[in-house]
Image (spheres, rainbow, N blue to C red):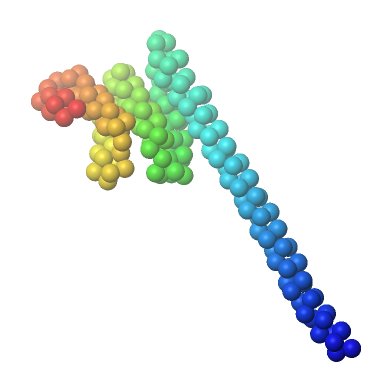
Amino acid sequence: AAVGLGLVLLVGGPTAWAVQARREARRERNFSNQLETERGLAEAGFQRSREAVQGMLARVADETLVDVPRMDGVRRELLADALRLYDELVAQRPTDSVLAGERARIARSLAQTARDIGSYDDALVLFDAEIASLRERLSSGEADWVDRVLLAGMLNSRAAVHDRTDMSPEAEALYSEA
């Protein structure tokens, strides 16, 4: 009986351990697969949100309504909505330079719309905020060439506001910097 018990322990112990290890490995694989699936769904949802903002709000405001008479107010509201949504997306992915660039282009369009309807103070506030943000990205090393191009465009657009408001020295300095 003692030999039989010893044999059971000798064979059964490692076998039970192996069975338990396989079960644990299977659970880990299942959890890993489930986690990967959830990540994929989250990424797909994020991309759908991004495409919705870009397609429905920004494109309509920036392309479709740009030349429609008396639609500047609607265009401005759509761009403001798009900017708020982009702020939320950027908050989720603060290191995504492509997303930050898309957001900056929307902000520039909003500022240019304010400028075009004569809301120069609003335009300057919007341009200043974006110029400061882009300069910060450049100084921190997070920026790429797209950010440099965006900054130059912002500086030129801000200078155009100064041109319209008879602030030529400020405009000249901005044009030089751009």
